[in-house]
Length: 258
Image 1 (cartoon, rainbow, N blue to C red):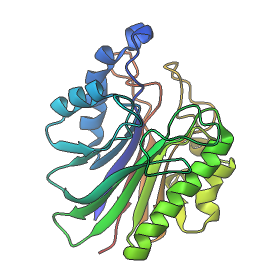
Image 2: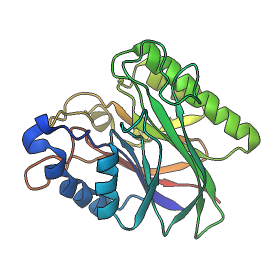
Image 3: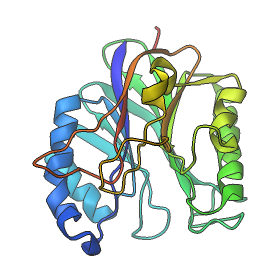
């Protein structure tokens, strides 16, 4: 089963962004998604009104996820309704108390969350899980302990039934950081960037609407070893001379074996 998956930090709706405000960008985001045709999209920073706007423009997709606190940002997962059925899903908090909504720990600047879903493919007898997160941008301790919370949650689900898994999101950390290396050092996950040459891998994914490429990524997709990575790209596309977000989306074509 070859499917395109994507992680995309869409930048919250901020009137101070002026020309780059949400109302000027949503059409450009939809253009990118229609061009790339991802089967599953892990989003970050979407507020409830943004989710409603995007859902109206993407009739082929459904979504799930909870806000990190009331009327706040989601790590919503969008998926193609004609490709998948969601068997189970949830959101947990990256804190000492993952089941308590709005909780935060370890000097995290904000409550941080991970949304997950178990998918069944409609055209093949395949099931897998997707986890989508947004780690803290200030506290390294919160990022390090946050990824451990995610792994513990994965392990709990896998004890009940092991399934191939995808982890994606904005890690707010560079490739050599402990919180990113954690997934590869664990020897269960592979970064989709492993299919790219070194120059591509070292390019930015956060560009602050400036469009620069030189630097290192902070947005990632990891897959368990049984999932084959066919290709990967950072999408630098401008639409009508504006960037759809302050992050470039990361896209990968993967194959999940039957």
